[in-house]
Amino acid sequence: MKLSEIAPTLREIGVSPVKSLGQNFLHDRNLAKWLVDQANISPEDFIVEIGPGLGALTELALAKGARISAIEKDKRLVQFLREKFQGHALEVVHGDALEFDTRMLYAQPKVKLLGNLPYYISSQLLIKFLEYPSPISMWLFMLQKELARRLVATPATRDYGALTLLVQLNHRVEYLRTIPASVFLPKPEVDSALVRISPRDPRELPACDQVVFEKLVRRGFAQRRKQLGKLIREELPKWEIAAAELGLNAKARAEELSLEQWIALTNYVAPIASGSSEAGQEESFSIVDQSDRVIGSAPRGQVHANNLLHRAVHLLIFNSAEEVFLQLRSRRKDRHPLLWDSSAAGHVNAGEECDQAAARELTEELGIQIPLEKVAKLTAPERTDCEFVSLYYGSHDGELRLNQNEIEAGQFFPRSIVDGWIKARPRDFAPAFLECWKIWRERNS
Image (cartoon, rainbow, N blue to C red):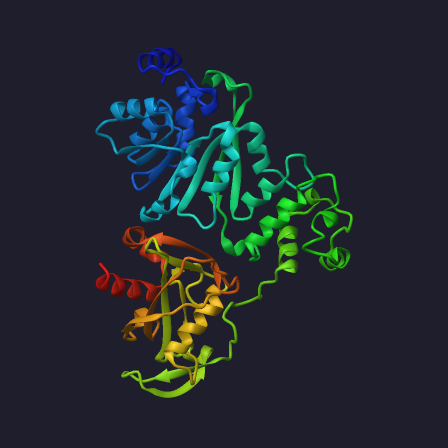
């Protein structure tokens, strides 16, 4: 929308830009086109747009054939957008982006996010929409220039801080260009910048307990001028010894440590087993015949290498909202790493019954003990990794203590979202889970 068109349009719909909502409307059409081009939008994309305003970017994204869900907090602009783009592949959501349920995006094949983020909540929105893991494949944010510089900062610089590390742990950030304040109406007091963010390959950096990582980072930067060892003394009483073993300066400040060093420090405080997360590589499994009768036992490696028939258990744990907990398998799994799976799952060891294995896996992976109900038994075709799977159900609303050696991350999901997710992106899931979920839905539709 041209500069000459913005003011009359705002008057016509009775809108005066509200500073508290961060309402600054882009009027440079060439810049708007360039901005949207940076997202490489195709008809296969589902776009989430935060703060569409008068639709300057919305219109260009629609022209590329994408479907869009635009989140707008101002009710007056919601009505304007719905009328302006009636008949287009656009859903205008009236609401606060901070309250948006990102889980629904898993049911879309390919998701990208566009956002001209209000300055006053930019950091909160970044943390929310960059949460790991995410169904979003690319983020294109227009931010206050100062904040954008923090996202791409390097160690020992003024802009390097907690937000830098929390974002860069799982993402790569590109500073594309500075956006002058003069291209907005009303003109903001500072310049903006455009950043493009993409997911980092999880295998690029060592794994670490991300909860512990965040805790250490936030404590370390709580007082920038103080030595790091003094700020994290509670987590690491023997800081001098740790610093020596990690090759760190014992008098270093938080801003002097690189991302890799912060990860190493996290793993010193909360170690994660190296190599494959499959504990006990020589553990023995029961080997069975086509009728699931035990005919012997063999080590894990031999079972998998020779596709021998064996037994496994899968558990589906629901909360009182009837949402199912799914786990993202650890990047160190020897099979199906970084795929989504049942709440808990594992093999039946030699000499062990399925009920015993289910209770053991529940405790080992989720840290809980609850009653379990056996739901079904699946046969052992190749799509379940040559496993006879016993499927169990349980209900739990309390805390889960995820085993970081086994589980990358996890979350509760509504059943309808899981259904849509499987339809849109079946490759996101471990094969046995797909079979288990199919059986569960057939019996609980």
